Amino acid sequence: MTGLTDFNVIWDNFAHFMIGRYPSGPMGGVMLTLYLAFVSLVLSFFGGMILGLLCVSQNRIIRYPTLIVVNAIRGIPLLMVIFWMYFLLPAIMGGTVPESWTVIMALSIFTSTYMSQIVQAGIEGIPKGQTEAALSTGLHHWQAMLYIVLPQALRNMIPSFVNQFVSMIKDTSLAFIVGVSELTHVATQVNNRTMIYPAEIFLFISIIYFIICFAFTSLSRWLEMRLAWRKAI
Amino acid sequence: MLNYHFDWAIVTSGQYFEWLVSGVKVTIELSVVSIALSFILGLFIAVMRMSTIKPILWFSHAYLEFFRNTPLLVQIFFWYFGSYQILPQVANDWLNTVNFEFAAAVIALTIYTSAFIAEDIRSGVRSIPKEQMEAARSSGFSFLRSMQYIILPQAVRITIPPLINQFLNLTKNSSLAMTIGVAELTYQARQVESYTFKGFEAFTAATLVYLGMSIIITWLVTLYSKKVLNPMGVRV
Image (cartoon, rainbow over all chains, first blue to last red; front, top):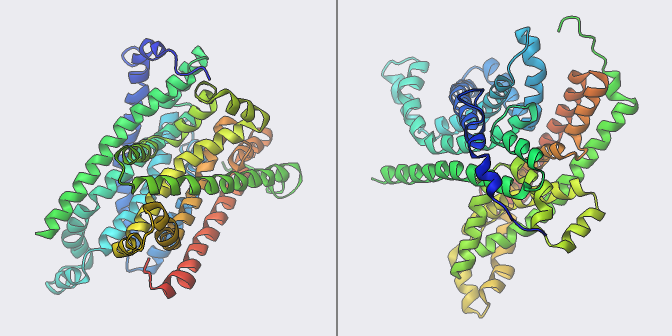
């Protein structure tokens, strides 16, 4: 045991950890981690919404295939999805695809399937009477979903969405595998260069991840409490 | 893509098939060892989380929040690269005599999963009526003994479906061990890909194995809920 001896390695590379080589080169570190997470969040929000609506569709020809695909993707590790994207995207797009987009697509598809479960649960949590009332006022089925059920369901889903976002921030660390220079990748680079401070480096980046994720976890808890309180009155 | 020649034979027989099979074995081994250890650790953390002694409570709270809010990959790297810095000499010597990559992956997976399991156990305990604890305490059991004999045996029974789900997550998470060179399924699939350039076949095989495992595990949860929990009157 040599203990945690020297944190100077952190301060010497601090800018590298935070923004990579940003102003003069591509962005990296925490900045890229957040970028990947936010872009994937937006894409998977819409992806999850569409998949979720397809999962609760009245039409079996739409519902069953969607359920099969969603559950199949939920059944495999994210790492597998990343490798699939790594192979398939260039084949589909007919050219090279930047690694960061490989990761963004993989994260979005993977998280969309989890989001779709949240959407499904949210929609099923709204009493049937709401849909029936909407239909009896003459709305079409999709109008009832879009204007009556979904707006109420969305509010209840927000805490779960935030939790999913936290998972996503943690999952961006897997971008390391395909060589995207986000925080974990930067840490391994610095570790390869300095050799003798691995514990300091990985402890430091786990604290950074912790600060970001804990902030969002707390936000989700607060939202949940607020929602429960609003329902109570 | 159009002039790609599929060659499924390489993943259904011969040397590469054997690689994949050995990968499946390591994945299962890694998952089973880690789930057993993380169940024990999770149980301890869950009991600590319900303790009335402040420092123990704080410690368990910090443990849960920290390990649930940091990426598993970073934890794996921390233990793999950094364990010699923070573990005592005896532990390091022992780790060097065993398969070190495997051990580091087990440590990381165990600690990560134990935090999730502890929360599952805690919600299981919360579903046991409070009166049970009061009754146990008033008949002379200490806090730990009433946990051991009265609360936990019931709570664990309710917690089994989420535990099996954690096992499923663990199996999927174990794929991250490839980053430190544990020769599990994803690692072997990648190995086959780099030896044969038949990535499509190799990853299809690995994907199907993972899918098979998830289907079996999900089926087990359903079966358990039907056969054991429903007769107990527990609704999951």
